[in-house]
Length: 331
Image: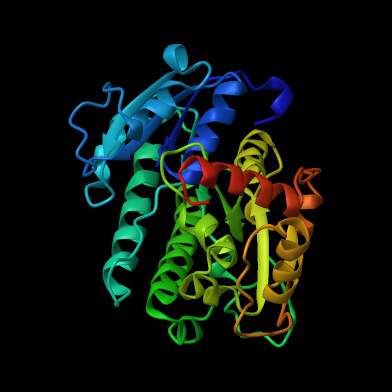
């Protein structure tokens, strides 16, 4: 899959109306790809051609009228993704069903089962050259290793994960088990599977709702202690545009293999508080209730060695996120 020889063909993005998925669809269209994307079938949308706020922002993207097709699909019925994958040269597995209860079992099983079924559809299509699975740094940071550096050799320990609050534990468990299963599937069946492990994803959003990670990172500006309590310890952040761009970069790179951690900036909640006070003094910023140093450092060295470069710093992430939040009336 050498980039210089690669013709722009058709690719599939699952979860295209989500935070990362929508940015990825936009960037793929800008790169000249034809894009099939999937949206949840339980959104109440009976016609994916309808121009609603849920889908209209995708249809309004430059190039969408000529090169974007939207399909309904449900992770609980993974065979529903087959139509969107048919004829594609690449598949970006972005969709993830967020846990809604206090247990991890259902989200684990749904995530792993649906991902493997989608990868099987990639195999059966006989046109897919590479699949990119969006995992999470949560699949690495609970490793329990004595080393203070988290890299691609770090895998989260399920026993440590389960000591976290239920929503965090459910998400981290699902991502860890699913990523392992995806990589094993690729090795077993000869399918190129690359996984990306982003940290907190921040920046402007193009969809009609504020993403959970953005809301958490702006929660000090909103005075929402229930949200920013999750920012204790290391707070590692990456711009959503960088996350979208690196997926295309890894798809087009002939040498891409295995796991890639994606984290542009390492910080702490205290450092975030100081930054917000300096940059946005006109807001009533709630001070954090806790103070903690960085228990680990997250390394993006493997990704940087490929030649990829992050475009955005923390200030740009916050500026973009706040502008998007203003449009929704959050500020």
